[in-house]
Amino acid sequence: MREAARGAPVTPASGEYRILDRIGRGGFGEVYRAQKVAAGGFRKDVALKMLNADMVQVNEVASRLKDEARILGMLNHRAIVKVDLLALFNDRWTVVMEYVEGADLKQVLNHHGTLPLFAALEIGAEVASALDYAYNHEIVDPADPAEGRHPLRLLHRDIKPSNIQLTPHGDVKVLDFGIARAEFASREAVTGTNMLLTREYAAPERLRAVEHPGGDVFSLGAVLFELITGTRLNLLGPMVDALLHGKSDFNMENYRDQRMARAWGVLKTVEGMNRALANLLLLTLAWSPERRPTARILKKELRRHAAILQEQESLGEWCERVVGPMVAERRKAKVDAPSGALTGRTLATDGHTFELRSDEPDLARTVLMKRSPPPRTPSIQPPRPKEPALPTMAVAVQPRLDAPTLHPEVEPPRPAARGLSGVAMLMVPLVVLVGLGAGLLVWGLSSQGAAPASGRVTLSGDAPAVLLSGDPGTFEVTSNGLEVPAGSYVLQARWPTGELSPPLGVHQLLPGGELALHCDASLGACTSP
Image (cartoon, rainbow, N blue to C red; front, top):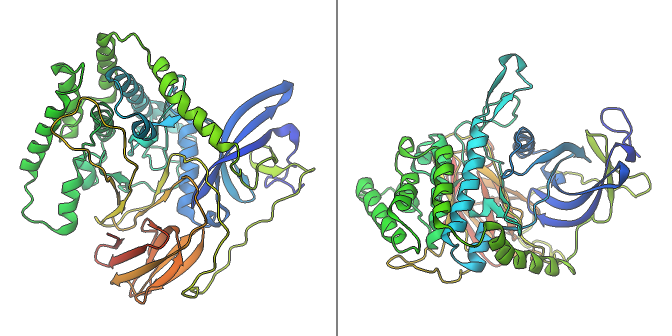
């Protein structure tokens, strides 16, 4: 066995992780379910989030992964996923995290439709409790211990249904702190005003790069609105469209008033809704962050309203009835699914590095090589079998200018919402990645289908070329266009000065599809329809 980076050999006595199966894979990493094995017969299921070998040289991605691990390592709340260890395996940063088996709220909505009012309120109260704890929890920063204890002031910045998970026992977990903003000196990535903005749930001030704890409260309010009514609020949708298309006649005040009047009309149709609760929910959606309740007040009020409903069924019982079968179905689907290269291996760790056990063969390291642009017709790769989808981890980098980039995300139809009238479902959500010129990277741990076929990428605008980097390889696209394998790609623009931009976002190329890119040097951004 090779020596650890810090000089001491890694031995089984230092700790072992037996890899059980791979539960997710994306362009920037993969996640394994493993069993921690320790002295005295101790066993514990954990999740290993492992950076891909070809991402180790992308500093922003590695820094974000390490920052998320450090942030979560400072927290200890029942509704926040816990982190046990951050270490290296073959130069790949790997995080040992709490393993949470369940379904996220996006999956629950798609499978079940709207939630009972009491369940939505109890879930909302747990999320609000986690937000309150994350913002007000006091820490001693190891990089500046002389400063003493101070609040972490952690903002999640991407609260949405897919980042809230339920277990079959009724536990609520807030996921994905990859783009969180916190006040501690030892973080590596520069947060600044960068953001991943999912417009169906984002607060209005986020368009102005204003960071406020009320932004997370607004997002939670938008999630609760959707859980209860089955309708996405999408307050920012038309505003973003107006911004992108330069509509000078867009009346913000009229639009805001009409939108909130419609929200009130929908809430009134919900069974069990009363005026006080409706007013509370509308207050979370107030235009000004100062008018919204704090997460602490929202937590208390949601619990109070849930108690008034006096439901005979608890959240745990409801989750057992609804989430339990979803988990059982997923387990059954995984029986015949391939599990990844590390499945069945055992990793030993000294707390700094992971190594394969000495009695198991080592894995060949991936060697990164610079390549010239590929021919127009790419090689065909063998098919990849399906694996279950995992929540998304988003990683952002330093911004420069206001230039929202739109990425459509089509989701399957949901069961019909109960108790709705007057407002149609918004069927095609758009994820707005507002990178302010430097963009962001999105780590999508999603289900695997067959190996990608090719699609065509075209380029217009100010950039003579763009660089696309992803699992299928690295490709340089010029104004002539290029056929490349389908998949997710990190985009960088090569400006007329010859300068290569920071990552400007992740773009998805579908098999047989076309990705039309337009780059604007004045905005420092590249967009696609």
